[in-house]
Length: 151
Length: 342
Image (cartoon, each protein chain N blue to C red):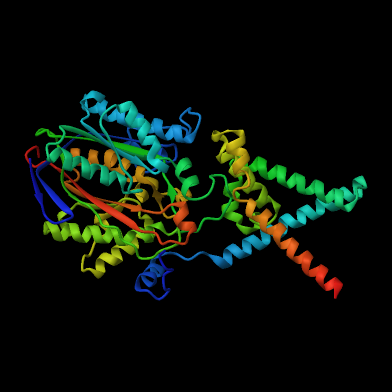
């Protein structure tokens, strides 16, 4: 196993001179604005659903999430999402749209290997980590809450 | 034919191994690029009417082989040995192509340096008299390589500006002991694996630059030449930023490679297309640029001597995830116009 490079090695220094930097400030700003805009739109939709149809908060929230997942899957299939993702970055990746895209893109990619071993087995290749560590994390948090409850 | 071994890495062929034909093909994006007129075939869509992109890649390889044979007026039965490779695991597209060609087959992998490796071995084989006519072919497909080395094609992650994108392109070159040909392979330099401990799989240009600089320096020293003995020194797919790092490294070894004598196949093939970020990558870059553009320019007399140093990043998805560094290799081939046919 090779070791990680020392940041002060002459090659790393020379590489840093020529390789352009990620535009972190710009990326963060765009992600913040885009993510905020999507969240606000979803919140508006949620609000409208509750007021116009009289749905309970939990139900309307679920409907909004389903619509976001569906639209994302459609945009992924149409080849639009990856281009938007390049521009908007974390603004699109952090909300549930990022999760939906990771599942849809993996399934599309492995379609030629069959519905079961291709699409089925690979659908959570990228998103699986979120589920595994999400559940594991939730278990730990619940355990801490339980212990503190006893104390 | 005389083979002069100049060092452990470099062989010179006198008078040179003839290039009797070459063919280049590319996908829709590359087919709209600056080198579109030099390509023998442009595929309007990435699928090539096949069930999978892997089969499309293989079909592209078969077609480029057929084109090269057709141009030379030869058949598959005339091919003595077939050297080929690609970027896919176990080089399966090349294996299927080799089955169609039917010639004795040697499958190769040096990542994106595979084209230079295939031509170097072909030239050595012909020069040694082991075969009369040898076919070298490599190709890459954006939809098969991207998903293997990076992410699914439709995954919406944000790629950094220094990243590169695999091109859809292929090239085939036919080499033969033929005194009448206009273009010859006159020398080859086989590279050594270099590793400057770059671990970011998006910085492949910078990871490959040391291998490029090493092979260029060894090649020039072995043959007692300077960069001014070449009209053009091409890297395979260092990209804009890798190219800058490589020229800086060469300058440190007192080899000033002027901008007007340097080019990168990946950048040339995809210039102006922002979807490729720092430039195109893949073993289709050097294959298509050499078999298309450079061969035509040499035949026309616009170029006299060109050094291609194909560059390959020897990584896999596994080594990257296990935090291994990215070793790289670069092989050099010299193509030049035959003097007696002026």
